[in-house]
Figure 1 (cartoon, one colour):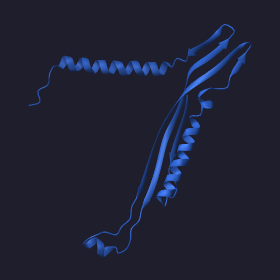
Figure 2: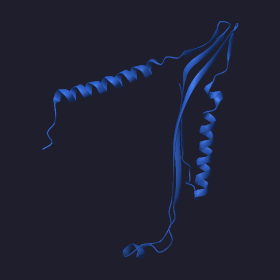
Figure 3: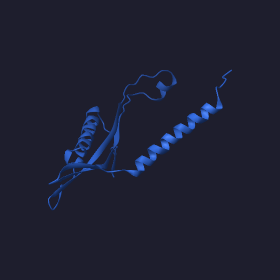
Figure 4: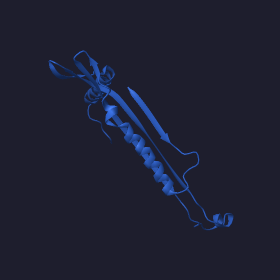
Length: 149
């Protein structure tokens, strides 16, 4: 499994919304490049008359935030302490890209077939999750209805 994590935080925050948008656009370009078809299908392998083509699944999640601020609207005591304009800006984002093998396509003189790649960890986690939900429901059913008086 290939795991890539990207956190985008500039050393000095963007000074304008435009710079934040450029940062977001650059980050999205990197994520889109990760999901290229060449990343999903591996390099073909020839073994005699048989062609083997590995395939993968790519999952991508990302998020961004942009902020800004300004103004000098204050009242009372705070206004006396600081006369002048305020400012602000900010932006950031991050994401994660995961890829894992899912199948192997095998083309031979006998025909083409797809052999799935079994992920025992994923199966074990699904079984544990299902068992946890079943135990929880069994416990609730044995406990009976609750009085919230």
